[in-house]
Figure 1 (cartoon, protein in one colour):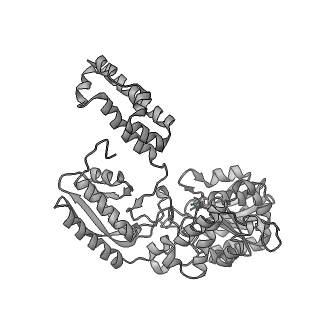
Figure 2 (tube, protein in one colour):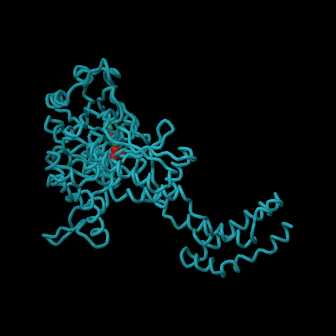
Figure 3 (spheres, rainbow, N blue to C red):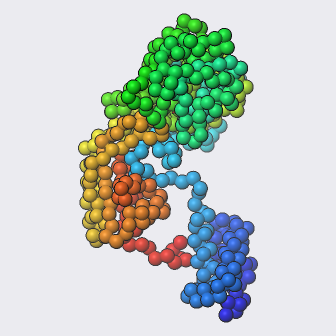
Amino acid sequence: MSNRLLRSLPSIERLLERPLGSRLSAELGRDRVRDLLREITAELRDQLTRAPHSSANFQESLTEEVERMLARRAAECAQPSLRRVINATGVLIHTNLGRSPLARQAIEAVAEVGANYSNLEYDLSRGERGKRETHCQELLSRLAGSEAAVLVNNNAAAVMLVLNTLAEGGEVIVSRGELIEIGGSFRIPDVMTKSGATLREVGTTNRTRIADYQRAINDRTKLILRVHPSNYRIIGFTERPSVQEIAQLSLETGIPSFEDLGSGCLIDLSPYGVKDEPVVAESLKSGISVVSFSGDKMLGGPQAGVIAGSRKIIDQVRANPLMRALRVDKMTYAAFEATLRLYESNTADLEVPVIRAIALTREEIGRRANLFCESVNQSTNGEFTAKIEEGASVIGGGSAPEVKLPTMLVVLEHSALSSSSIVEGLRSYRIPIIARMERDRVLLDFRTVGQEEEDIILDAIKGIAQPAPQTAASV
Ligand SMILES: *Cc1c(COP(=O)(O)O)cnc(C)c1O
């Protein structure tokens, strides 16, 4: 039986000539489709040899089965690997979901500069070769309150570059309370080793005083490092020197000080309830020699790392040969500059998506969530019930772990489906929707959902209520 079935299967070349094969060949390329057909027929042959009875499962002919599989796989191949998703988790800077979405102005700048030639390394006033580092330099310095600034690939690169530039072959003093690990295996002690500097730990996990730093200084000391403990807090019996004390010690000893700020807010977000993220300019105003921070955390720009500080140090950093390996491309400059301009014009709270989302009130979110619940309850014939509940959004991205922004959540239930099936259904939608799952309940936090995304979520929910028939023609 199975052999007869196998023999009924047309050759791969014949399958490629059939309507589906030739249509897909035009989309994906004939070689790719041929590979897919080889994979599929090999799998089926294997399956039929091992379990001949399974042929009974093929309701129609084997050719139709092959084509059904081909259509499904081709649809998967046609999807880009990196895709847009809808973030309904309420985690604002979700590291797994690409951190900060960019402002419209940043996207436009990327499109303009990316699609055309640009003055990336060309001095338009002199008509000769220029330096890429000049872009963003003044704007960043103004916003950070520094003499100079430079952009690199991310904050991990920034930390590495500063340590290597200022402390290679010497000692760097760090508090034991600040020997942190950021997700993705970025550990201060390891970065230190790679930079060629020696770590000189002082104090204890919970308490370090300025006197501990003073005592550790010797003629090999090249730098005093302060790290913002982004993703954790030590509470209780704790002590940590202030930025001013570190800056003062640096001034007295002539040893430069460096603060890794992590997120790096350009504006004070405490009016919105984000109280424990340091403002970049404050740190530099206190007298810290150089700071570094991320471009795509609280700042809401593209992935980048900023190094800002005294002109002398920034010039040294720029002269480091590693700079060439860590520099950013034109699209990053374009997006970063456009984002910074929004801060300069004081419109970040309206235009930068992350800041706008932080600034949303529970009432605003609640109004949208309420209307959404009504739509769900009206449009799924009672299959789904959606109701409102108070909850909290978090900053995420290893920032402000204690901050809870009050929000209104949509609680989504189905008469027959389990929470995990709902979550999975949402995730496998055309535009994947990432929901929050808490105590076995499906929650949607609209703080991180754009207004124009609500209809997409509604369509996905309706689709789960009434699954579309899966036929070769519809895939
Ligand atoms: C996030 C973070 C980093 C790493 O920044 P990336 O931009 O992700 O490379 C380094 N230090 C601190 C304190 C951080 O919070």
